[in-house]
Length: 480
Image (tube, rainbow, N blue to C red):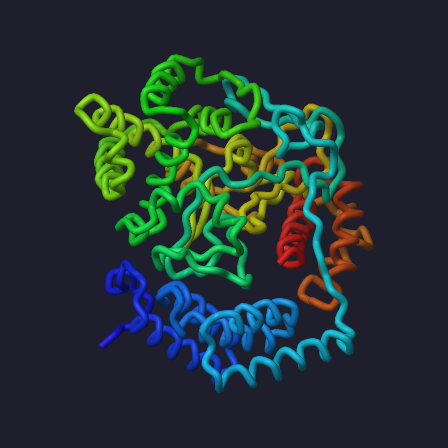
């Protein structure tokens, strides 16, 4: 009996048509219930387990094309139809595929639905040393805030100031996203050697730095948190010509001043250098235990073990994993099913009165201004993701997770006031009265933008906080 619940502990670590068939049948259940997205997830899993050249491959592509068709994603449906036809598709499905292909072409000609594309790009010229960051922002250091980002000029609301690709990332094994770019609902292809991952296309497969190490090993069965630590070591290996070069680098980097500002981030080595010098939490006994657990998981990858042979290199690997453990627990972001680290992103400090909103698009972390930022002002976002918790609750969580006490305007009772003049602003009243009307989302966004550009540089107030929160929520909703 095959359990298709998605439990990776019972899933085989190899291509297996019997398991693939069971996954496909599970997808059929969701398809019959017209849950196209969930059905596609199971068909993708079926594809990843299908033995190369078998009928299961063609069946997965064929069923997935039906999902795309019902989701009105006709171009993607056509791609899967062609792929299924070129595979070992059964004769009785060929007629269905050709009929679906014809219907796609007809519907694409008559469809009135405009194609919406979003162009995510920096709102200013990129910094020459840190291309993910705008040139009107710079990295600075002082004793109070450590390394942080500061505006070099006034920056209005709704400007993208940072758009950074993740340095390392890992997702839950049940999430069917491209292993390289984290894209969803794409015309995925499976790794030809193992069932662990899918990719958008051959380009994504060839660009990925992690899977060539993990492929076929039990590392692919680890949970995403453990996998993140394995990938940190893999990025270290990829950044240097040899283990000896890596060992020399680490010895030198540990002697650097903690306040040193990175000089650039153009290649893999400079990105790893940036990562290795990120802030670390003070070490505790639990960190030693966690690091040892991560080390044992990393040893599950035979290709890594082959590089770190002998006592000296093994001890160095344990030493490296310990530093990675401190860095990751201090700087990683994520949720219940993924974690990632973005380098420059990690230097943005917290404020309960933020002027930035962060969100994730694919494998990029994006920061957009949600208040008018004045020249010389520090750029901050809310680590807690909300403006509404009581002060003592916020402080407790911040101290527990990030080891600091916030002293921002919201946390100072004398500044967290009601501004009657702002409350009477017609734009504030419009947003306040219509905040839950989804049909007015674009109007609400425009009113928020106008209000915040005019009043967002004022001292924090309940009105500024409310509009900032609504604006941040609208940004996320509309970008999705």
